[in-house]
Structure formats: C-alpha cells, structure tokens
Image 1 (cartoon, rainbow, N blue to C red):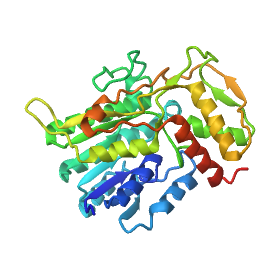
Image 2: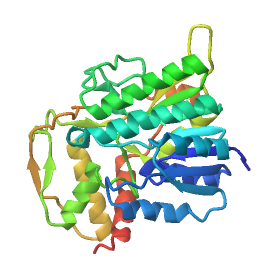
Image 3: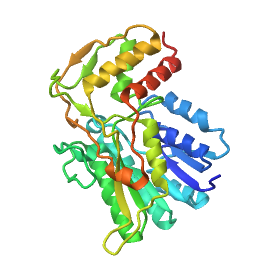
Image 4: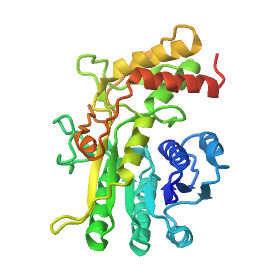
Length: 338
C-alpha cells in the first residue's frame, strides 16, 4: 500500500483519468482536479470520472488551475507529496483559432502550480510537455537534447514555455521537476478532437474524412502513435526518479514518451479501418478527401526513447494494431454502434 498523496491536474482528461485509475490501483491517494471545460464532449469527461469517483483513495475537486487562490487552498489542505500537471488546453489547430485559452491555462495555470510547489515543497513535479516542441525539426528520431527553439504553433510555444518556467523554478527554488514530451497519445476513452477518434465519428455520420497530406503517399505524414497504457507506465515509472540538483545543473529534466516506431498516416488509417471492421463484424472503408497540410502541423514526429529506457528500463511497445483494436472495441460498445 502506498500512502503518498498525488495531486493530478486534468484528472477527468484522457491521460489524467487513465493515470489516476492506475495510481489508485497501486495504492496512491489521488487528489484530482479538473475544470470540466467544454472543449470537447463533457459527457465523456463525466464518464471517465464516474469510473473512479467512488474510489476511497480518490478525491475530486472541480476547479481551474488558472485560479491561483484555489490552487493555494488545495496545496494547503492536502499537502501532496507528488504533483502531476496534465491540465492544459490541448490541440494544435485550436490554438490558431482561440489563443486566449492557451495563455490562461498553459501559461498562467502552470505558473500557479509552480508557485504552489515553491511554497509547499513536493518530492517531484511531473508535467505534460509535448512532442510539438520539436517543431519542424528535420533530424529524426527526436532526442531530448535537440534544439527546440522554433515552435510552429502557439500550443507548442506554451509547452516550450512550461519547460523553461519549470527549469527556472527548479534552479531558483530547488523543485525537482520532470517534463514529459508525449507523442500522439491514443486509446479507449480518448480525446474526440484527435484524428483517429474524429475519423471514427465521421464514418458513422456518413461524412468524408479529411487527410492533410496532399494525397502524397510517398511523402506521407509520419506520427509516433503511443498507446495510453504505455504513457501511464512511463509516467508512473518516472514518479520515483526525481532529478537531483548538482553544482552546475538544476533538478530539472525532460523525457520523450513515444512509441519509437513512427507510422505513416495512411498505414494508421488502414489499421483503423481494419480494427473497426473487426469490432463491427463487417467491412469498413472510410471515404477520404486529401487536402494540404494545415498551418502548425508538422510532417513527422518520431521519439527517441533511449533516455527513458536508461532511466527506468521501460520502452513503449504496443503496436498500432493492438491499440486501435482496443479503441474501436470500446467505441462501438460505448456509443452502441452496429
């Protein structure tokens, strides 16, 4: 039994829910906070919460991390040993349409978390960064030591800012902090704004799916799709590995958590069609339309996971066929599709 208190922000989110559930199974006491915003279907957030809200080791507080006073109150009352900040406004394309919410949540909200960790010292702060910080880097696979000063979306810029802010607070106040650069996370109870989920929705709505690769199959987009269980294992594995301050280095580091096995977007789509065919017991083929790549999108994401493997001996290995089958089985059951 692990009696440590863990504050998980974004606990009703995709990663936050799966992580909280696993931490509860491992005996951690979870204080989960989420503002339950309507960026996507709130019912899905409530469905996730309903699966864990009655657990003895789970306390849920509906609030926004951009509210500094409320964050301070939570730290004062619960005094968490570990903090995992997953609350953020997600999405590359949405950051072009609605920049305000990214500054509010990803910059001001994260600043509030850092301030709280400064005044209520924690053993380890882990926070969500993103593969998007690599921008349009041509060198692959992406390594944590790569230059990341050319973000191509405001979302990416806020995540890079989080890394800089965490490093500064670690340097000034010795807060052990670890940034987690996630690579295209997918799986059951996932985010409806992600392509695989949206494609599945469109199939059942008899709509065309838009593929942003100009129909160029030789130079297709590559993505390092990472199954949710692998993300959770990586985070939990790193919990007890807080970076240590040295004479010339702050107690701050970053890790890629990706599959280290990028797939062409079209391979991902045909795998999704096959998985959905298996779940429904009939052949599925999406109607497709090919369009130019969108501003802010990057042509490839490809994680080097060597650093993660050296640190905790873990390398994500769920194949897209396995992971997508679990997603489509869940989707068909959850939405009662025939």
